[in-house]
Image 1 (cartoon, rainbow, N blue to C red):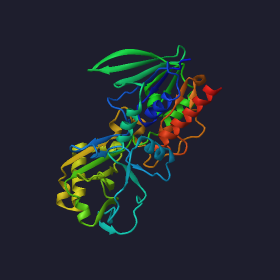
Image 2: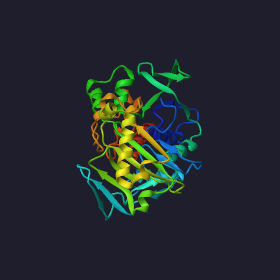
Image 3: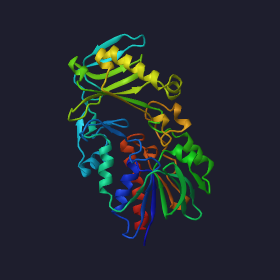
Image 4: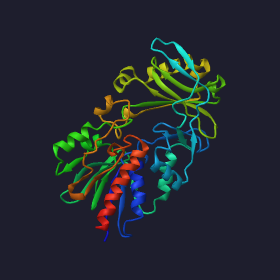
Length: 368
C-alpha cells in the first residue's frame, strides 16, 4: 500500500529523512520535499572561493565532534565525507573590555574540533546524490496545511510570481524551526494553545547570529605564531577562528559578531564591516584589514531561519523540552529538525537525532 509523505524543509533533517524513507517506503509511494529557499541545506551554507570545490568556507555550522556525535560520524562514513582537524597551533589572543591585547599559549578549547572537507555543505550534496526518487521543489513556501482533508497547500514563487499548488499526502513531516511553523503555516484544525506556545517559545539556533569570513592569500596570523583563535570583550567580533580549507588553496578567518541583531540593524552593515576591519588591524596588523574577500551572513535577516522572536535568543545552545509532542493529528503530522532534539538541540547531531526519532516511529507503525 502506497504511503505518500511530504517533508517540509530540505535541511539536514529533511534530506536525511528522505534518504532513509526511500529505503523503506513501498515502490509506489511518493516522497516530496518542499523547500522555501532557492537552495537546499537550510542553515548549512558553504561559500566557494576559487576554482576548487574543496575550497569552501562555512557561513553556517562548521564544527563537528566525532567522539560525541555518533550519528554524524556514522553518516559521514556512509556518505564518504571526510573531516580534518581544526587548526589550533600557535598562541591565542584575548582582547579585554578596555581594548588591551593579550597573548596566551596553551591548549585550545577546539583541540578536539573537526571540520568537513569541502565545507559542511558537502554533507548536503552527498545526501542529495543518494536520493533516487524523492521530488524536491525549491522556491516553495508552505502557507497552510489542511488536516481535515489531508491536503497541503503550498505557495510557489517563481520569477517573482506566485501560484497556489496543492499536494496530497498521508503524512507530513515538518523539518523547520518551530517558530517559523507557528508563525508562517496555518494549520486546520489549529493546534492547542499549549503546543503553539511551546513552538513560539522555542529559540531557533543560529537565528540571531551573524558570521563573518575573511579570505587571504597568506595566513598572516600563522606567520605571527598565532592560531587565529581570538576571544574579545572589545569587539565587534567576539570569537575568531582559523577557517582555512583543508587544501589550503587560500586562508581564512571566521568570526562571530558579538552585537545582537537589533544592534546590528541600528549601526548598519557598512559600519559593522568597517569596525571588523579595524579590529583585524588591531589583532594582526595592517594587512589583515585588507582581505581578498569578506563574506557576511546575518542569519537574523533570513526570513526562512529567523522570526522577530529570534532577534534576542541566547548565545548558548538551548536545552529543548523533552515533553513537547512531536507527533500530532493522530499520527499524520510529525515534527523534526534540530529544535526538536532532546540531547543535541541546535547541533548537526540534533538534526539527525530528531530524524531518527521520527523514523523509529514510522517503522513501528509499519510493523504494527
